[in-house]
Image (cartoon, rainbow, N blue to C red; front, side):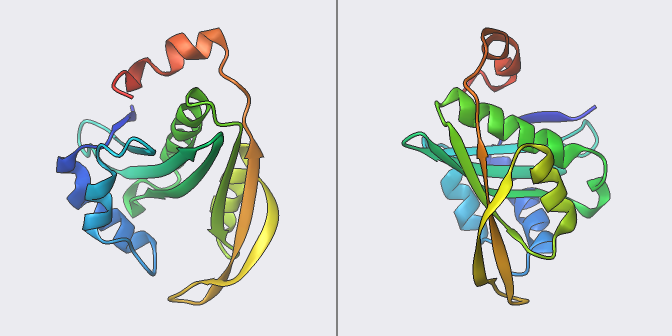
Length: 164
């Protein structure tokens, strides 16, 4: 069973390793360290009892808008549903913070990620030419409208993120 929780300083090495194998232009460890305790950031990790960090997600919420900056899962945990669970958790927290619209960028060639995002209501709204490096590639900008939390979601969905 997957457990999604707030990232802690002890998770940074595992997150950085996933980042390095997932992206051609990875964030440095220092970037992840800065996210711990950042009031604008939502930094979650997911895993199980054997591997507590199999994936992570990062988003920010400012002024009613959110941006999902990263969703990544280790190669061993891909196609297990963990990426979807992480995305659902971060979108739930964005909604809890009053966010009504979320954005993200995804590589044009990343069909599996695009499919995941589309399944959660994201649709392409723009293209950023040669946004990514290593290799150079366009980014698709995707947007999703987010509904306010229902009373049931407020009670049950966020109890695992009591510290947020």
